[in-house]
Length: 261
Length: 268
Picture (cartoon, rainbow over the protein chains, first blue to last red):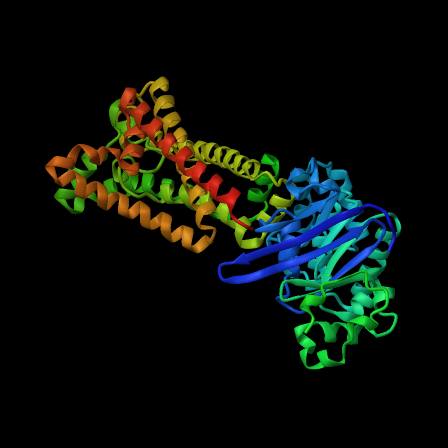
């Protein structure tokens, strides 16, 4: 990993909803110019971690910072961070252009940026059609366009490849690589291993509310493939835990060994 | 943020439908009291007495019929379609965001949630003023061209009195809309908010009736929200109307404050 100061810093985050402990202890950091994948099974705490980072939920302990500040303390957050959560925020009556007009009005950018952003995500032709006729992939593209309106330098994306067809996934991968190549920071959550392998520079594996391991993907998978690593560390592959030897993990930069069974 | 909230309203069907239903309700009530009932009054002597009370022959009767919430004596102090539409429009401004996830985009754009609440309140005020102007236009027009008005030689109320009655009617819609908004922000579920608001409006009528028949509480009956609406929009105006409008505004501000605190504390 590079040694630049982290754009995103998450430390010992904890959050519960009633008796359910959604996040127990999550720590990692993401740096500019890199794509960090938050990998874990469904219900591992990925989305909750992102919601806390974006100021949508309050942590019980720990902190989640962007450029050293909590999201609500950023002076113009939408110009610093673009986020896509659940491809949500889309009303089926509205067109893509209307959605972007609303977001532009909310974050205080001019309407002129809308057409270039629509073009950037490949929605120019469908821009004036109601969202109800959109495929899941088109909705994901629109949600991404919403996130890009403020020209952010950090992208936080929750399961961004969900619903995208192979061409869409390829497009997204290339877009994220190019975003990072221009110095941007990408934090994405996923449970798809191939997506991680193809797009990520850095990896955090999270399960049952705990970050289990983090580091550069190349280093983490130097001696075992990603699937083996993932299955050995998470509850999904609990039957394979006996095959995993933490000491053999080359390049491990941060491992919560206590969580390994 | 305010412009964004207004765009949200104008780019979806539900707020337009709520407004259209309200305007049609006001028009239908006015048409019923000004045209339909007089036309069929010969069928029943009792109905003739009621129709005589609804006539708009004199200036006082014309002003009494200009309740923007619909139908003058047909709806005063009770639940009208116009009133329900106002409450639901306010609720829609809040709940559409929760239903479709737009509240997340709003919170990402403006992490200070007081700004979100402020923008929604301001958008509600604008919507209520526009809707109120439509209500006032429809109600004023129907009274002006009603058969009993024309039969008595035309409109005789002074323009100042007309502006006073209709203006108070428009102003009353603002706290009502904000109450609907606050309910939506607190409850978040669209259907649950609608049920609560309609239930509350009906319960208000029942409560007012119960308070009125008990001697010890009869004076309180004029302080239920719908009774306050009736006083504020009534033809007599004066200090009572101002007080009623003031109390309604305080109720709306209190509800909006509770909604703001709740929005600030809740996870989204």
